[in-house]
Length: 390
Ligand SMILES: Cc1cc2nc3c(=O)[nH]c(=O)nc-3n(C[C@H](O)[C@H](O)[C@H](O)COP(=O)(O)OP(=O)(O)OC[C@H]3O[C@@H](n4cnc5c(N)ncnc54)[C@H](O)[C@@H]3O)c2cc1C
Image 1 (cartoon, protein in one colour):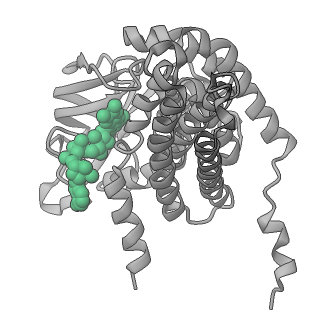
Image 2 (spheres, rainbow, N blue to C red):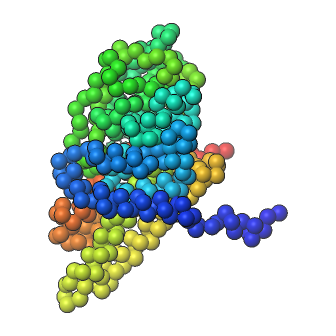
Image 3 (tube, protein in one colour):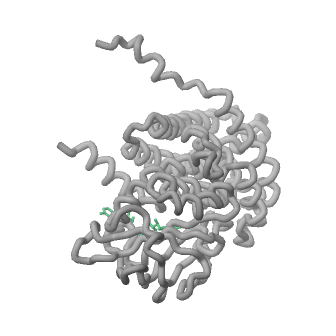
């Protein structure tokens, strides 16, 4: 029978030298490269093209991929640390990182064939190109089983028809993982995931969305009309597509939870600094208990969100089941991000309402973390079903 002492190792929350080095490199990049242009990119809805290229060169776009496929071979804990630092400054850049790492590279590496890995994963992991994950449709959001996009089996290829919407990296990606229904009679067991290349005949990228937040990211509708996708571009066995999407989103939620954590901690750090500079009624506002207590709540909730993110990542690194932990991390961290960015604006008073002080952007960016990769309601469905299952 193991004693509590035997379990001490498992509760060790100390970060390794390597993990700290990754965090510091991400922090340097965020503060020195991303921060200077972040307000302009948000205002102009400009994709961070040069910055994403540099993220790739630094190894942040394929962090967990095996080095033999051009990746960084890092663990999921390092990924959380890097996502937090990048998201503290620029959530539009960090969503590119999250989609490429968790939704595209992970799925290809875990379920792709050797040929698919050589051809598609390697350039994605190196950051030479970026990828997109295409599940949502105008009539299939939370209810992702209602796929209207079809991939008809034509023998040596699939004929792809339909529309995907809200696709992150939609205009800037080169490689798209597209979920589509092959056999409607089989329901979600008749869905496949196909690797589609930009430029395939019949594939059209629609207009870019004009968004509330993460305005520097590139969100598009995609149209497929009689696109011929070779059979060898299907991921996994026939009918594996829905399971592929759900497994992939399980890991993706660690990325979005870490993005939410970063948005919250970025706003908190700005609010903390501002509260020690701004004077009202003869003292800095942090000396007013109402403000000091806000800071105490913010720091505590952010730390709880961080621990949930690290817990999910640690389970993944140990090869253990992490879907429940990643849903909990996303549900909680996104709530913290939304609530605490509002508080950060409040601590800044009127200055918080203008772009120059960053926190209004963070408040707008925070909202999406409660919506994409499964809304908060969907996370509660995932969590409660796991808790209640026999
Ligand atoms: C900026 C942005 C980027 C995105 N990027 C991508 C991407 O890269 N790839 C991709 O595939 N998708 C992407 N999405 C789509 C995103 O994942 C969906 O918007 C999300 O899953 C919700 O789907 P929906 O918008 O159709 O809302 P709906 O599913 O219509 O939900 C509307 C509301 O009803 C609630 N609801 C629905 N069903 C239930 C239920 N059973 N019980 C309780 N409440 C329920 C929802 O929680 C929500 O509050 C992105 C979206 C945005 C806005």
